[in-house]
Image (tube, rainbow, N blue to C red):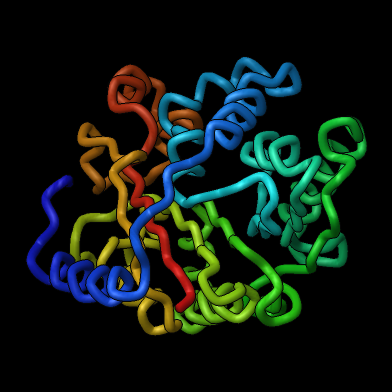
Length: 280
């Protein structure tokens, strides 16, 4: 899993060379950034169950890798139950802007309506944490993908959503990448994590059956959209994950037979790619 075939390394090398030619290198997070992230991660509004997943999701390390700062305008795509919103909202509360891109209550999907309703109730229940979220952008690929005015955001973030877009079609995934590219300012970051499939697996098939995408496919999608690859991290890698099982069989879902639960628990959550794309 940690071994990258030559084709992936070539993709990385070419893009990183182009990126480094115009940039002095990654900026280390300020003490204030790290402190504010730590305070958000330790927040009393986060449940014990959510905090228990930090060991797999590494929120501080991931957001620092993306280069987040507390004065940024950040768009979070499809926040689901709000696991990352619990960290982003208080972190950006005083000096930044958090925009949530999520489906509206008019969506045809009963599942999405229930999720949006629960998410909306979560935000309204604790204005001291979530009261500064700037706005909600209707986002329902492939019908709605525009994220706001061009060149208006510093960072767009997505956490384990891309397989849903690819399930619609490769064109839908490309449309989301292009929407992220368009809304970002020059130098803006598209921070991307996703369940990882085995290298060069059939992307559409592995997305539909396993909810995973090969890393090489995502790197190429970013380059097609116009991004440079500023960095690839193994922060969220899991070498115990065989990458050939449906991610929902692993924790926290454990959707397989009970006889497999102990084995899945021993593996832990899925192996994930973590990629920092930058708009030139």
